[in-house]
Amino acid sequence: MSGILDGKRLLVTGVITEQSLGFGVAKYAQEQGADVVLTGFGRLSLVERIAKKLPKPAPVVELDATDPEQLAGLADKVREHVPSIDGVLHAIAFAPPGALGGNFLNTEWADVAKAVEVSTFTYKSLAVAALPLMENGGAVVGLDFDAQQAWPVYDWMGVAKAGLEAVNRYLARDLGPKGIRVNLVSAGPQRTMAAKSIPGFEAFEEAWTKRAPLGWSLTDSEPVAKACVALLSDLFPATSGEIIHVDGGFHAVGVERTENVSTGQ
Ligand SMILES: NC(=O)c1ccc[n+]([C@@H]2O[C@H](COP(=O)([O-])OP(=O)(O)OC[C@H]3O[C@@H](n4cnc5c(N)ncnc54)[C@H](O)[C@@H]3O)[C@@H](O)[C@H]2O)c1
Image (cartoon, rainbow, N blue to C red; front, side, top):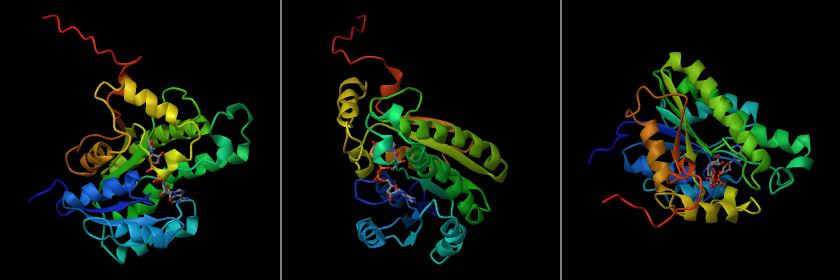
């Protein structure tokens, strides 16, 4: 069976559990024919165990995306497994507890700096570290949470995501001439480890379930994975600096769904 990623090689970050959005992307990418190399942060043996649960066990290379030395060595480590890549997924975010949960007015700069360093700046760092592996062009895809409005409890992570959206545009500007497309998928809420660490995250879950015109599953990340894989494939050859919402249509509507829709017939 042919897939939209046949013959492609991808580097996927951010896998820590089977619920990780990165895991969903790696899985669907393999199903569509890609060879996948994962990066792991910190608990490498755990990531290696999760990597074995993919349809085709994937090699794992270590990467703390805030560590300049590890970033500089990334291309050589990846080349131990594949000669080059066609795309890279950024699925990395972290904010210290003080930067989340409704403490916006009192958060210390050190906590804000950490959130922005890990969740925003690493998008640029990862793209640059992967450049030597993408000499024939390719795709960079990142994961966003809509930063056009203020949310309850998301606080400085929301600011970090607003920065991520800006970084997306600047990367598109600077990597376009190298034949590299750069896009974000703005996902609705999913029950991952990162999400569970946000106190009050249930508020998002409830709102999405009630409001998203298409409905929304908090535990099925395949729609997000499919959009990421489409952007990593050749199907979007002239799209860059874009943000694609995979949120059940939530961003387009203002209040809860009503069941009384008149068709005028
Ligand atoms: N879960 C959601 O509701 C949701 C919604 C929209 C966007 N996102 C985004 O999806 C992405 C993936 O998060 P997730 O929800 O799958 O959670 P997750 O906890 O499964 O993944 C977060 C990953 O970030 C990695 N990470 C943290 N610091 C790192 C560092 N210094 N270097 C390298 N990796 C590091 C962790 O190891 C982990 O694998 C994040 O950007 C997140 O903001 C999540």
